[in-house]
Amino acid sequence: MGGSFFNYENHKKGEIIMEKQDLSPLHGLWALTNRELKKWYKAPFILLLSLVQPVLWLGLFGKAMNIGNMFTSGLNIPGLNIPKQVIDQIGTELIKNTFGTSDYFSFLAAGMLSFIVLFTSMNSGMMIVWDRRLGFLNKLLTTPVSRGSIIMGKVLSAVIRSLVQATIVLVIAVLLGMQFKPGLSALDIAGTYAALFLMSLGLSSLFIMLALRSTSWESQMAIMNLLNLPLLFASNSFYPVKLMPSWLKPIVEINPISYANDISRQLLLGATGMTSIWFDFAFLIAFAAIFSALGIVLSWRFLNS
Amino acid sequence: MSAIKAINLTKRYGTLVAVDHINFEVSIGEIFGLLGPNGAGKSTTIGMLTTLVKPTEGTALVNGYDIVKQASKVRQSIGVVLQEYTADEDLTGWENLMLAASLYGIPKNVAKERAKELLDMVELTSAANKKVENYSGGMRRRLEIAMGLINRPRILFLDEPTLGLDVQTRAAIWSYITKLKTEYNMTILVTTHYLEEADAYCDRIAIIDRGKIARIGTPKELKESLGGDIVTLQIVGDIDLAKEIIASMDGAGEMRVAGDTIWMSVKDGGYMAPKILESLNKNGIKVLKISITQPTMDEVYMKYTGKSLREEQSNWEEAFSTMRTIRKARS
Image (tube, rainbow over the protein chains, first blue to last red):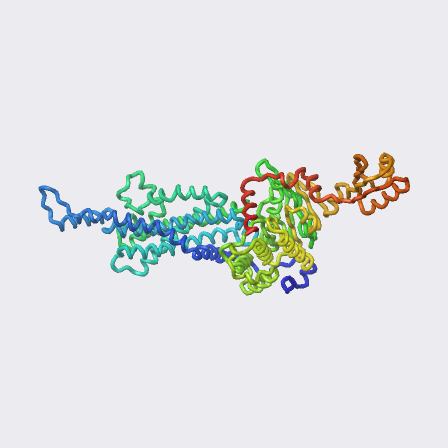
């Protein structure tokens, strides 16, 4: 043993000594975020696995539901002799009018960005359940690290993971034939990432809140499975708001996923939006701010038993 | 000043009183053992002292800081080693120590120095850069202890530090613990299910049952509270006379007779046995055989909790957590 570790005078006398430093309220935040990220990039298999779903959607659904082909595959109405260009023109305008862009594959690809962000953000709740189950959370709670940092470490790591995975999905989508609007600028891409960032921030805070007191990963899984597809289908990820029945529209219009999609489609594809891009951003900023603040407040109250 | 002082410390969960107005003090530099069945309030007590659980009533001073009003100060001044293995398996021992350091806001250069010394102290230097999932149970426990010491705590809380480990490793862990006490005057609060360990290494022990402290004292006092030693005599001669002679002596306790054998509890067997022999010999009673035995902590535990350790029940979550700890300990 020996060494100089505890060897100073007052220690031997049994006096209380304290570290003199003032702890910043954010200390430990990056260390906790980094812990999650290390666990993630050290297991590339799981990372690949989480990419399978959106890529399959893109490759199968996106390619097969090629609505543009409806018109180009030869429409022949008996008795009418409509020139092919006219049909093509009508088809393109029809699709553009409904989807905001004439290319369904690109429309869906933008939707898949929020798909992967949603799924990754949801996992943040799982991480806290595991930490509680394995005793790591209790250990954390005995250290002077702030409760807010514990929560925000999870949120931040989920956000970073979401954005990295969204990038991979975006690259794959481009390889499969996604087409950007002409004259795409760096600002457009930055705007898209900002939207995904805000959405991920709010969603991971939300799912962590649901998991604050939970010790059962089974129930957490059940919540995730219950919410993931309805959240996607009650958004404009797969189809535009225009086609929806009137009862669904109000739900879609409070779903943050819709706004993230709306931003990425306007910026990346030059599509006609559901609403103005400023309203989209205002909504997402409010969503992210409210839920992350709520997460921090609730963590002070409910993380301890 | 004492290291820990619990004042009417109470925790209620709904109508269940998990910890019921307990009061005790732990002196600086003491190894203090908490024993008790699962669900007796042991974990809740440790939880409150380490600021994991908020007391419903009462409070405690830990290192002089109030656990309710100065929780953050308490956290900075204590080290906690939980029963579960909390080191991250995907990270190396070194990375885990650095993570622990950053949770205490220790600057990187200081942390590196301390981590080196601590790894040296628990003899893990050569395994520092291996992933924790490759550690044996004993190595994991030593790493946990090192992590608990990274902030130079004055008090170390150890919850079941030897659970599931083999005998040699258990002895090694205890040698670290006693060194922390003797060399650095550290206060250690420990729980264990191995009663013989509590007996051998704790300065004082509190037995908790149904949320209250059933008995508190040194291991010797606790065993003596059962009536001291047990002296067994096998004699030739008048057994009733022998009984009378012994009963008239100072310091004789309860007595039982069966055939030619007498059992009695006495305060100090080593002191009493020669006197008994002498008196009996004087009266012409021959002693064939004499033995002195001491009550063990098992008997003490039985007496104050009304159950032996094996009869315990616990909820499934605790059972799983214990199983997981034991499985890792044996890996």
